[in-house]
Image (cartoon, rainbow, N blue to C red):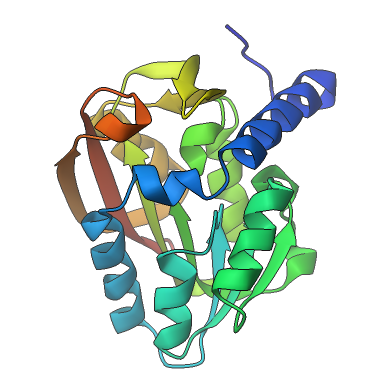
Amino acid sequence: MSHDDGTGTVRTGRRQAQAAAFDQIGERYDEAFPHKEGQVAAASWLIGQLAPGARILDAGCGTGLPTARQLTEAGMRVTGIDISPVMVSLARKNVPQASFTEMDIMDLDPGIGKFAGITAFFSLLMLSRSQIPAALARFGEILVPHGRLVMGMVEADVDDMPTPFLGAEIRVAGYPRDALRDVVTAAGFAVREENSVSYDPSSAGLPPETQVTLCCQRAGE
């Protein structure tokens, strides 16, 4: 099991492997997870918090469905990033009104500009636990004061665990729910709403899981 610090060759190799896995998965991801009610509800919360035209980062945008499309249809200006070039290409086709770039969450910096909101649905899951607090800190750096963050994670006490997924192998990390809340709070976010749904992604060859969504606000200002 790897415990990299988010730098150097370990991180590069892990990133390349994750990107290659999602390149291989492509459109089958949406087929395996057709029901995303929790994700849609959290994005709706975000829309309700922000004015039309607000700038939002979709971190780990995947195919752009449903989140980037939902946000753009609500009048938001969406920038999506993903480490998989195949996913970025699909997102551009699915949501031409948004802007998509191949980028690692760990490469985010203030040069990308400020955002009123960030969505991160199951993208932090693809990092190691050593990287997740740093990713949350990067989110805080690019959010406006009192900016919002909505995120989804699978509740699981694992770190950098190899997992077969749709014919590929990905590496995932997770936390028990209380620990996840602690990590998010320590990164400078106040949790405003928390919800969970039980989900059975049987078509993906995975066991049932509990998906947790957190609706947060940048705190301390």
